[in-house]
Length: 342
Image (cartoon, rainbow, N blue to C red; front, top):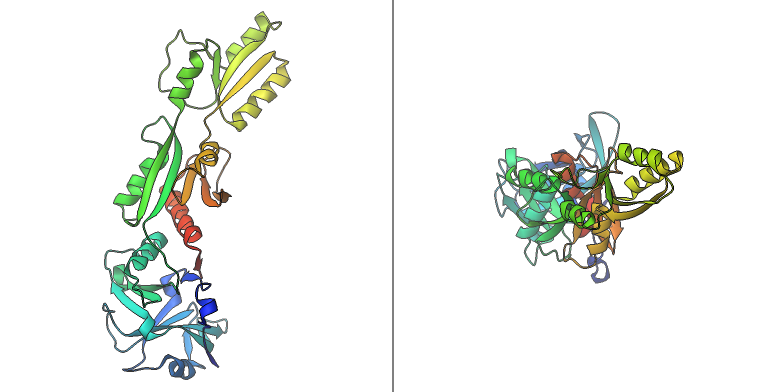
């Protein structure tokens, strides 16, 4: 049995934006000149296809895909556990008059933000789907339905300095020059200037304590405390309160509290927060970025997504890799567009 997707008017705006997880999920066949997708589905039922096939692009010719071909997209259901599976059902995802094809040899179709934002830029008013042939002639598509997606998308990176430029900005520059970030993506930076916060704390003349690298150099006469100087203070005179400006975050605050409790220290701690995640929470509602990416020392090995004022925020480990940043950008594109990757 073949089916058409329900495209009644009350459903059109609800149809999700969709793209395959991998180009290996997409097969391409010559369906013959003037093909009818519904009939092709009937002909395909009972035939074998590669085990990963979820979608089939129907076209009228063999050879490399060309721009503005007549094509259609069908979604198939398969059964079986071998390398080849049997097609048992199918539905038309996009008819030929709703599809357009584009050949962009320099696009890496494996980079989700690249292929999605590139294909979105090709969308015409009467097209619901864009079939894209990228590097190495690999073919994938983005199904947009009736959704109005208007690039560019803006992402805000929130990170600490020094070093300057910050870690996320360096990775973003590398990703851009490596072609891993779409040109339809605007990446801006918000620096948490720990040096400025550090210097402001020193003006008060109180001890400054930090577990983080906040300054590249400090003068010897400046009152900078560490675990050793705090314990020396306790040994000399613990009757008076030692006022400390803590340059750090809630994690370093909890460390100092445990240190205080364990040694019975007479400390008064003022936290001067330099956490990028906390800063992102403060600015999320004020900035025009649709999504944010931050580093956080509480993240050990993996990233997570949260929402702040309805905006997606990807929280990365404190030592993210280039791959971590690109994946975070892909995840933001998925979240911002309401994209289904299947």
